[in-house]
Image 1 (tube, rainbow, N blue to C red):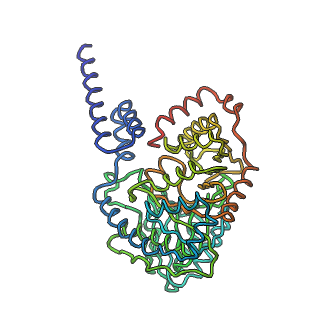
Image 2 (cartoon, rainbow, N blue to C red):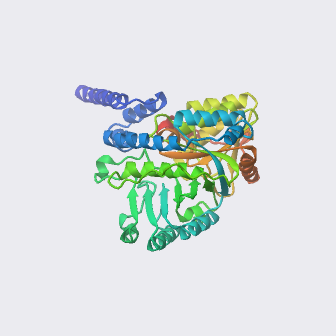
Image 3 (tube, rainbow, N blue to C red):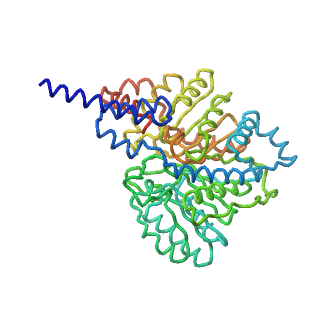
Length: 480
């Protein structure tokens, strides 16, 4: 028995030392550090297998690719920022103080150019979004750039492929990026006909050494389509039948996506080129020249802000924090996953405490049960601090948006969670001005009519087992 105890002690000691060395050899925030130590110490061996796939950073080679392409992309962005005197006047009028400060902050820090002349059409339902997208693809004459986290080889995925093949037959250039983890079930051979007509398709950061190089983190979560460098689509919709409300599990799928025209299209094309060149350095795409000015379109300032392992700072998170802390009247957020880090959590509580109308709308059902328990935990904490938590009940809410007063609205691929703010490659488009912001507020108000406001009674009715799962999920929130 003495020897058994000694062996167990040595095993625990060696496992603890290995866990500390593994976690501390890379710079992380304190919450993530403790979460990984918890997993590695209390799940011996198994924890290290989990870490192998979910805890490692990108390789040095990948980071060099990203850094080199980011530098090129920043130079391309910089060429786009030329504001006319009329544009300067617009900065000082309709955008408001909060809008002007955010626009300047994101330009100075993230090199995100302010696109002044634009038009947009919002989509909240998949059938309308894909009908418009496929129609624009059918009208394409020069180029189509497609980037999605998820492309499923189902009915709508096959329909998209058919329209891309038809475009290739007309002589249109087609480039496609998709994420391997987000598109599970997709086989490379599914794209063989697209390639046979000259289309180029790449898997984001694919590797021949799938076991040793695969990572659950650092996924390309962006959704971007650019057609003829004149029309762009971006937002929350992926490509799959469930996003058109065809899933019995989720039913109606509520998302936010936009069709964009104007100066902002060039910024999205630059973002696509950066992702393409970092993924496929052997077939690089040229960056677009100085974009054509669209003076025929209304003055509607927009700004594309990207963040991820390829950016020096988590710019989208910083933008969210800046808006929340600058709000004077309201902050309304829609997100399918509510797992905020300490920065965003404190900003939300501070705003609510200061009397700002803070509302957060989340789904009433999980698509990832463990993450949903963490969402419930944070929803409860925020409710107790005076934040209004709304559970959307007409199907699944996948929209990712933020509204600050009547000055700024943001939408895109970024969820309000650790993964989007720190780990994934994301893109969010900020829209400035009262008229545009009120359109987003109108959608939020409409959704409120189909939502349930979280109450003290709802929380009191939660059982002990559910509370335990919420607490446990909260402990692992930084690595979910």
